[in-house]
Structures are given as structure tokens and as C-alpha cells.
Length: 457
Image (cartoon, rainbow, N blue to C red; front, side, top):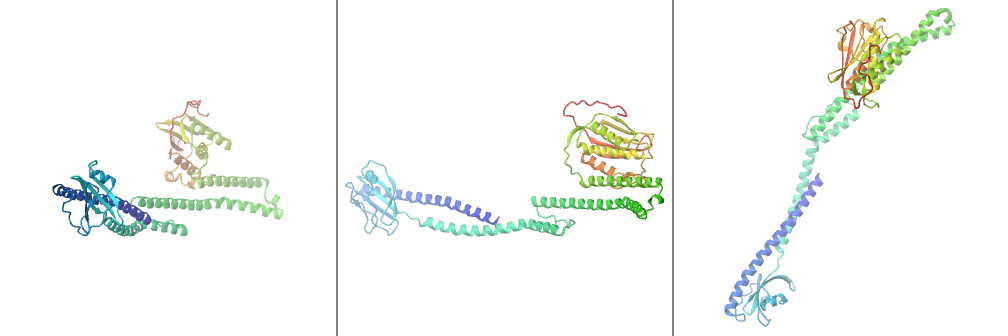
């Protein structure tokens, strides 16, 4: 900025000097020519009265004005002691002969340059001249040069001062960013100072630091909760395996455990492994956050619900799902939405009695697609409702059931990512009613999907 300021001032001073020099030169030349014309008219008037040969020529003052009379025969008269002027030019000769009008011309002598004005008088002409003096222009140029240098130096100093003052918040911002990078301390906000773009930049970086703090806090909580949730199934799995290994080393595996006990123990091991696999998959899904390679597309949510219900039936053959869905188009990621619907159905399947189906309803309501999943179980206690969608949260009544407490948290994350809302209430059958509202979309083209699917489809 200092170099730019100094360069801009130097260019401005140079341009001003050029313009001012031209104006000054024009003004001085115009003044000198007007004076030459006035002096020539006076001398011509005297010459016409007294004659060119007898007219009294003004004495040479030593500098400044010079005069000369051009006689009809081409000879000239000049005051005594006056320096010689350049020879009469051809154009000036035509003025003396009366074949041309008055003439203003520039001529170079032996040492100096002259401005010579020729005016016809009688049968000849008079000439008044002045030495072309460039000293005012030179003095003006020297003065402008000195002023320009002072302006450049002053502009550079002012530019540097302004730059350092204006960029001081940027320097402090850089130092704070380096400190955060070196210490990994995200809790130190950068002071909000400066104005305009700098203030907006600092606010944006503070917002970024806040988002990083929240992300780090969420990662820490996820790691702590995951370690806590993994501890119980891993401990149980390790104890059961150690028991089998110990009995096998002693050779008492067949005698110490009956066939029924071994079968039950192996089933427990299988269930624990399946629970760990599910927990690992859900932890991976949560750790990914909203990052996904899946593209958003326009889709019929009814197809997603039907596919999720079929997947739930294949995983739990005894689960009965009653579908009552209407074609509703939304914009979203099919796999993520199907995972969320599957989690809702799985959660309801844990609580619904064997003789009561899980009811899944999908309809359009205003500008929203409304999905409801209810069961005929005991419902959710009022104290547990605010924490239903929290990670790893499991009500006291649910701790004996399989699951990690992550399913509904994944549902809420997927719904929020699609601009929707997930809520919980009590169903008409006394169980839990989980409701999802998603923004509906207009289909791009008519589809072949039925407008209504019958219950149980």
C-alpha cells in the first residue's frame, strides 16, 4: 500500500506538472506576443509619421525588447548597441512589401531564440522582438520537482501509516489464528475490532471457531458415550468367551455345560456380536454426520416407506407392519431416508405386542409429507419424551431390550438434514406415536405410482 500510494502521488504530480507547464508556457507566450504587437503598433505609428528612415528608434535598454526597421530596399535599421537579430526572413520580407499580413514567428539566433513580430509600416515594416526566455518554465519545473518529491515522500509515509493502522486488526487476526493453530485452543475468541470488511472477517472466523468447538465437543461426547456403551457388551462377550476357553482347556466343556446351556451361551454370544455390529454401524453413521456421497433427488416417499417395511420384515420375520401410504414426493437422499424409516419401524417393533401390528401411515398434509409410525406398546413416559432423540439415551424400561439408543438419534439427524421435524406423542392405541414432517415437492413428471396403497401392502 505504501508503494501504491507513493506511485499514485508521483504519477499525479507528474501529470499535474505537465498540464501546468503547458498552461504556464501558453500564458507566458500569449502575454509576450500581445506585448510585441502593442509595441509594434506604437513603433509603426511613429514610423508612418516620421518616415522609416527618420523615425526615432528607442534605445536598447540592455535586455528585453529589441526593435528593427525594414526599409523598402530590404536594408534594416537598429538602435545603437543592440544585439543583432537574425536576418529578415522571406515571410517578413513579403510583409514589408505589402504582399502578406503581419507575422509572428520564432527564430533562432547565434546564442538565443527570438519571438519576432513583423508589422507593415509605410513602404516597409517594423519588427519588435524579445529573447525567448525559458527561465520561468525551468524555475517552475524545478519547484514542481521539489514539491513532487516532498509529496511522494509524504504520501509514502502517510500511506504506510494508514496501511499499518488499517491492517493492524489483520495482524492481530493473523497472530490469533497462528496461536489457535499452534495450541489447538478453540476457546479463545478473536477480539471483534476494526470495521467494515475486517469486522465481518473476524466475526466469520469467530463463527467458524464456535462451529469447530461444537464439533469437537460433539466428537468428544460421542467417543465417551461410545466407550460407555461398548463396555457392557464387550465385557459380557469377553467373560463368556473366557468361560468357554477355560472349560475347553480343562477338558470339562462337555461335562460342565449341558447341551442346553451351551446352546444358550452360544446364542448369547451371537446376540452380543450382532449387537456390537449394529452399534458399530450406527456409530459410523453418526460419526459421518451430514457428509454423504449420496445425491439428493426427487423421489416418492411412499416407495422409500414400502422398501423400509420390506427390509424390516426380512430382519424380523415375526414383525407385522400395516401400511397405509399415499404417494408424496419429496427431495432427498433415498438411502438415508430409508434408514430413518427402518429405524422408526424397528423401534416400534421392539414395543409392539406380537398380536398387534406396527402401523405406518404416510400422507400429504398441506405443504408437508407426514409419516407416522405407532405401536401398541406401553408408550413413552412423559419424563423420557424430551430425551427420546438423544444419542445413547435409553429409558429404564428399554434397557433390557436389544439396541444401542442410537436409532432415533439417527432419525432426527436425517430428518433435520432434509429440512424436516421429528416429534413423539402417544398413539390412539396407547403406545408411542413417532411423527416425521418433511417438506413436500412437486413431481417433475407424472408417475405410475398408485395414489393409495392399501393397509398391509
